Image 1 (cartoon, helix red, strand yellow):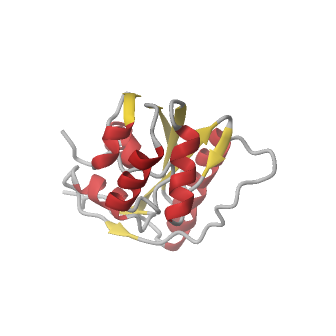
Image 2: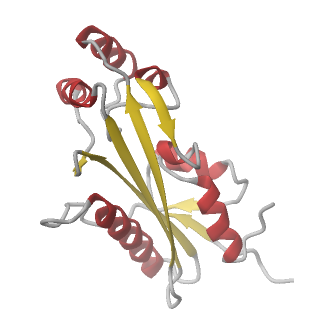
Length: 194
C-alpha cells in the first residue's frame, strides 16, 4: 500500500487553515516568500491567478514530493483591486465607498508539486452591499475590527449584515478558500476524499 500524499498549505492565514481543516486531511502550513505587489496594469483576475501560482510553486520548490496548495483572493471594486484596510479609518473608508455597490471577489487556487504541471481553479463571488449609514459602518468596524480582510468585512461573522446579497457557487470562497474546487483538485492529485 502506498503512503498518502503529503499536503502543504502555502499560507499562514488562519481563515484558510480553518477552512482546509474541514476536509479532514492532514496538512502542514508554510509561509510563501512571494512579493504580492500588483504589476502595472495587472487586472485583479491576473493578479489573483499569478499570486496563487507563485505561492504554490515557491513552497513546492522548498518541499520536494509534497503537493502544495496556494490560494489568493483579490477584491475588485470599480475594476481595480482593493486590499486590506489595515486600520479603522481604512475600513470605514472602504465600506463607505462600497455602500450600495457590488464588489467582486476572485479567489484563485493552484495545486503544485515540484517537477509536475500545476493545476489551477478560480472562484468568483459577487457581494452586493446594502446602503450603509456612517454610524452602521462604525459600529460594525468597532465590533469586528476587519483590518486584515480585503473589503473590510468578515462574512462568516457580523459582516453578513452589511449585504443585500452574495452570489456564488461556493460559500467558503468568500472566506478565502473555495473548498469545492479545492476538493476537486485534491481528489485529482490522489488525495482520499468523499
